[in-house]
Length: 429
Image 1 (cartoon, rainbow, N blue to C red):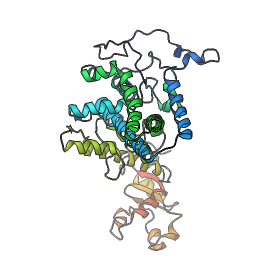
Image 2: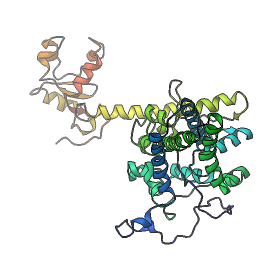
Image 3: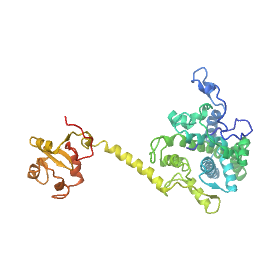
Image 4: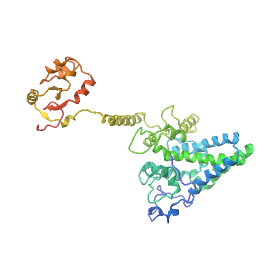
């Protein structure tokens, strides 16, 4: 799932070399260990995130009602939405969180600046939470577990303080070893303010004299859309759609979430195959992040694109299709299970046929009393078959019966001939 980390780093500036940095703190009491009450609710609130999450869209809406939207500003806001959104999906998510491909240094630099404009925390913070999410999906150690509710997984987990005693571990030693990522984390406040607010405002102002439009539309409202597009993957992608490859966890696939999140909506696939650089595997499925990564591979911007073996992908899909068919199958009447039928010797079967309309097919005794008058071949054929093994006749000696006939006969089972079927032999009561 596309994760959201804290907007601004609150850790000390020093970057620990511990691969479980941000996870190895000694366990001590945290306010989140206590339930929220009327007397302590304000202590549970993350007072950095909450004002930003509420203030940015509020001020942006104010600007929308007081500042005219020009054509140039609208176009710029949309372009910058895609630039910063793809910075998250192609950069934070698929490149750094999952190492689904490798990128040239110039493209990495572009992604760092572009993603910083989305104001979703530093690469280290974002990827740490996201890796923990994949490792502990739907558990209490999942930073934004869908099992805590739609609102919590969408935005509530950022408005409330995170409990360091609960969040699962994630190895980010590879990120700590990258000097560019370390610098971005250390000076993230400057990256976020510059790329998230200053640049979109300056471009509109210097470009066509619309500073306020650039600030309200290209900065604040664009930022609101980018945030909630990302949040939808944490929330909506775990509630809307199909379990295409695995139904043991909440992630789902749906084109609506994909449209909202620049291709991240095929989330069940992503959780099953997280190192695949694709989210959408069909050419007609919307995944501009995949298209960008693939396109740049032709000019050296990206390389070593990882794809999970198609054979294994198909296995997962077919297993789920089979599971769905098995569930539908349970709704139908298939007759008594053979292993639960009483066992008779052939002589007992013949004796029983003297008072019952029993016939034997493939070691199974069937009572055809209700079907004698309905038999397409005529009543006389069944009446002359009572007490006999008519397996050869049934399988083509007289007529090779259809699946429909076999399914019908399954509801007429009453017993098993000893040695004539794979059943647990037991004494007839």
